[in-house]
Image (cartoon, rainbow, N blue to C red; front, side, top):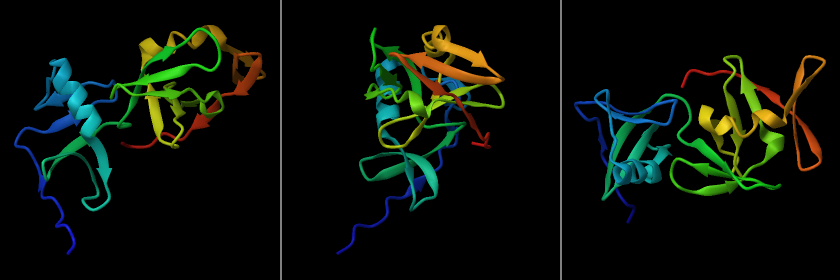
Length: 157
């Protein structure tokens, strides 16, 4: 017997994950660290509901995601390869060949699974010393290698 589809719940006050990695409920920031961590761990895209949801105990709560559902909070390590620390507390290897910048000058990268992550401005501070420009193109130099920073097509999230 197939498992029934968990019901999709729209809260009276919208639950939002902002482009800056902040959780909001009805426009008010959620500041309890354990609640933020739990929401981040449970957030995923539900193809059945065609929406981002926080799923727990057989229920799915709709979440408005302004950009990407995961953001890079920090780069960890002093030598290659770096790791990235995500908002859900997980670490992943930094793949410098996936580094890209949007028309709005926001930086992104991809994780090992191919998922795209927005890099928060505080985390970008670690990258700036390694970025150079040559003939109008930006490059990331690290670990004795040079990577071209690609362009990201902006999208409405």
